[in-house]
Length: 75
Image (tube, rainbow, N blue to C red; front, side, top):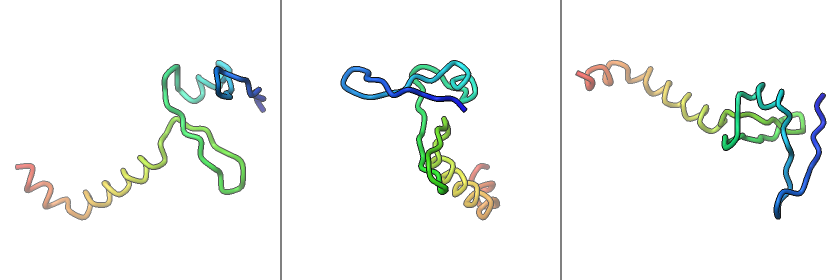
């Protein structure tokens, strides 16, 4: 378990991520991270946008249903 300390940064509060956490998240300075509420309580911090993932699933469903139409339009 990694403990993070909440610190005052300017007029806001923030946490500093240790190097090993930054590497595990494959992120860096200026990157966007997403904090989502977990169903069992608590939160998940991830570099992946869950809304984007849902949208891509919809695109894949549409592409599968209209595969022939899309193929004809691509000609």
